Image (tube, rainbow, N blue to C red; front, top):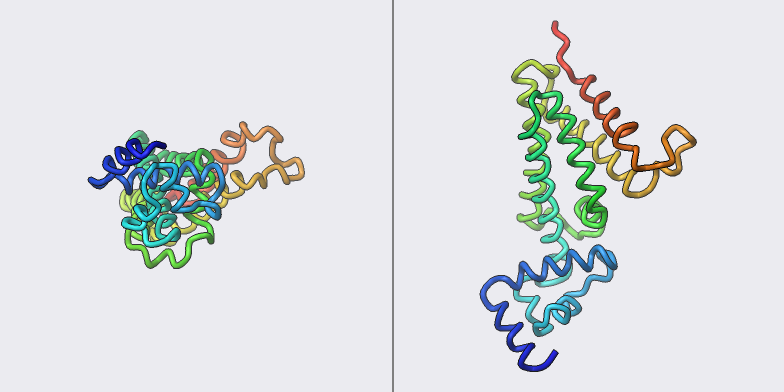
Length: 216
């Protein structure tokens, strides 16, 4: 990049959009090389700014990764909210939010692992990440609480049911993106494109049947 081009690129990031561009570029690096090899200096070089510029927004790589994880949680909230809005009853909302969650993980495996894996150091020290994660979990909690209120789901503690549902959905998502269904002994189809119908959807139906209210 020429000096004039570098100056032009640097100038274009003086008004608040450098942070956004860093996250955008970091997401691409995450997909290509994984979190361990992400470098603030490499991001600066790719964007065309000085090597010190990223540190105005992120004091270190861990802070950058925390912001990426928060971004992932916000995306997850958006897709699960869309699934809830499109469903007609509580049981279908429950299934659809689970499917949307798993589809998000399958479409964004590197980001999903960053969001829930051990890479981040001290994740609870980042308020943006904590808030984004709580909002994503609140989607499941709200669907279950509304079902309880309408006596469509068992009259139990919504948080207990939500944690159980989350554990199962997260487990399915993690097993799929880690390729563990290929290790099954013939119980599951070898073609993973059919897992939605044979494993994921049916597993969620089994789960929702377990919390349906069946009267006194």
